[in-house]
Length: 373
Image (tube, rainbow, N blue to C red; front, side, top):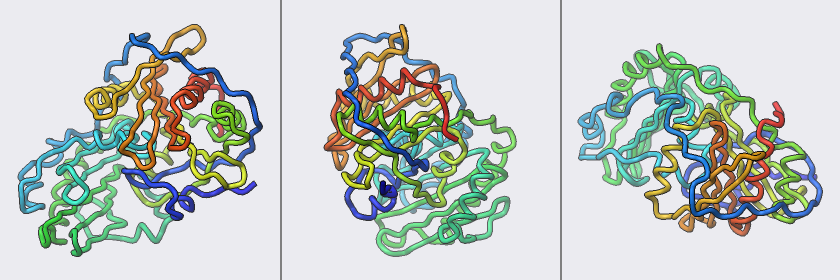
């Protein structure tokens, strides 16, 4: 059997999506051909209420972290706040801002497009992951500028169009990631960016001291034969196997490596052929994050359909939606079970609503059946 690494597949240009690069949990296994699983019925009324946002609180409020005047000074123009999580609806939840937020972190954004924006992300209790990723990905974690109260790595600035700067700073045990770009030539300068980052550090240092512990949960055995066989059965294909690790030095990588979540990407074969099938994510203690997600989905451009899953005798409400703006088109199935946010997303030609829901149903029924690391 030949595995295709997720990064190798991305480098071939065979798959693109509207958010950043992808993290993968290492996996290896074979799966057999089984009969397709049953399809959950659609439901027009709720079966279980959406949990209230009572889980791990955010480390910092964006307004407490930095003032609007500091943002405008960095960008040399008015750059209003935007909803960073709204743009995170496209892509796996375990590989983006929701993973950071669910771990008690903070995700803030100003500006509403990739050419002109400022992003500030903070992840508490991330010093061990900082050290691990820096040791492995030395090319992406070279020492950066000197800051009072923090150690920086992996920073860079370019004055090309668009001018942009980015850096990572370890403040106590919290990972601070900052990036800024502008469509206006000369709007961002390296000295002004460093001054802005320094401005953030005291607030992050104060919050770091009292940061509550993040939710901890052993990752599900999503790369095991059982999961791979169930996925192949749901899609009626001979094999589905997990894709290999391809990570780098970044804050989302720290959220994944800290055993705070489950993340597996799958391919529709056991020999590296067929490209990409889909991704399973599970975030623990995620009632607050899921409530935010459902609010954003309800007001978004891709309407969500309510479907009914079951866990034993208990009925569980799930949301299923198609994201036609993604490239390729994707299907998402999300549900909250005992505080665990489960999401399965698949890309065309596997963005098939009934089959994606059938695999999600299997995961719900087998939640907590075992771990693989």
